Image (tube, rainbow, N blue to C red; front, side):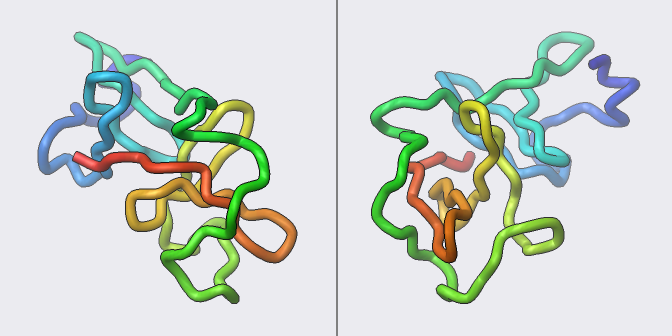
Length: 109
C-alpha cells in the first residue's frame, strides 16, 4: 500500500503504537502490522516461534479476568501467525475459551 493510500507517513508521533519486530520498527494500525518502506508500507506478521507460541499456554495476566477482547476493547489487534492477538502490557493475549492465552512478548518502541 502506498503511503498516500494509507493516509500518512508512519514515524515517531504518528499516533500508532510502534513495536520492535525482527530488527526494525513496525506500526500497529487497524489490525495490521505495518512497516514503512520508501513510498509504501509492507504488512508484516509476528512469526510463530518459541518466543511467540500459538498453542494453549498459561493464562495471561494484565487485565481483569472478566475482560473480553474484541472491537473497541481498548487493546491493539496484532497479526500473529494465522490468527490475531491483542497487545496487553507488552504481551500478546489470545482470547480462548473464557480466558486469554499468553503468546509471548512484543516489545513496544
